[in-house]
Amino acid sequence: MQKISNMFSRGLIFLLFTFLMLGCAEQEEVPLNLDPSVAAEIMDDAYGNHPRQKIDVYLPANRSTDKTKLFIWVHGGAWTDGDKSEFGQFKPWLEAELGDYAFVSVNYRLYNITTGSNKFPNQEEDIENMMEYVKSRLADWDVGSDVVLAGGSAGGHLALLHSYKNNTDGLVKAVVAFFPPTDFLTFYGFNFLTTALLEALIGGTPTSNPSGYANSSPTNFINSSSVPTVFFHGTSDNVVPIQQSQLLENKLEAARVPFLREYIQNGAHGFSPTVNQDLISKAAVFLKTKLD
Image 1 (tube, rainbow, N blue to C red):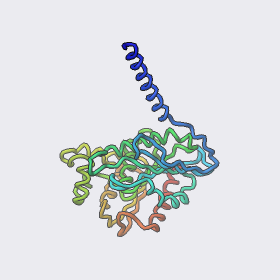
Image 2: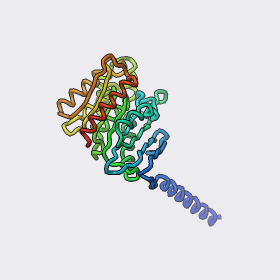
Image 3: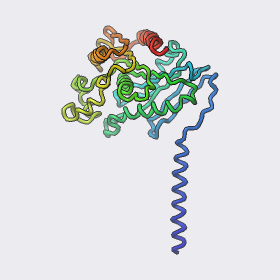
C-alpha cells in the first residue's frame, strides 16, 4: 500500500511539473517569420494573461527596421469602457498621413465600477507591460524603434503618463493626445461624475490619498528631457475641461519641451471627421520634423 502511495505521489509531481513546463512554453514568444514585403495584420495578440491584455498590429508592406516607425493608439472610455477597435475610425487618415509607419491598437484592463476591481494603476501597468512586449517584437515585425504613443481622453492620459513617467528606455520618441486629463488634482471636483469616478478609480480623495493623485498625473513628470508632445482640445469640452490641456501647455513651456497644440473653438469632447483629419495631418507634419 505504501508503495502504491509513493508511486501516486511521484505521478502527481510529474504531472504538475509537466503542466508548469507546458504553461511556460505557451508563454514563450514564437518567431513570426513574416515577409516584410507583404502587409500583415496580427489581431488579438496577447501581451499578458488577462483577456483585456491584447493588441492589434497593422504592418505595412515593404517595411524595415531602418525606415518604419510605429504608432501606438490607446483607446478612451473613462478608464471603465472602450475598446481597441476605436482605432478603426482614425486608421485610414493615419495611414494616409504616416505612410512609413506601422500601427498598434491597445486594450487594457478596465476599472469595474460594480465590483471595484482593476483600480488605478492597473491601467498604467498594462501600458508599461504592453510597451515591453512591443519592444520584444519589433525585430519580428521588421519595424524600427521610433515609437509614437497616442490616445484620446483616458487613452491620451495613459499615453502622456507613460511617455513622461515610465519611458525609461526611451522607446517613445513623441506623444499625441486628444482632449486628455493631465492633472487629477485639478480634474477632481470638475463635476459630480468626475469626482465620484476619481474617488473610486484612485481610491480616496486628493486629501486622503495625495500620492495616488500625484502619481497618476502626467504633468507632474514633465521635465526638460520629456518627449515632443502634440495635443488637441475643444474649448467647450464638458467632459474634460480645456484647462487640463492649458495646464499641460504651461508645464511644457516652462520645461522648454517642443510641442504642438491646437484648441478647437467650440469643440466638444470629440471632433468631427473633418476636424480629426485636419488635426492628424498637422500632427504628422510635427512628427516628421521631430522624428526624421
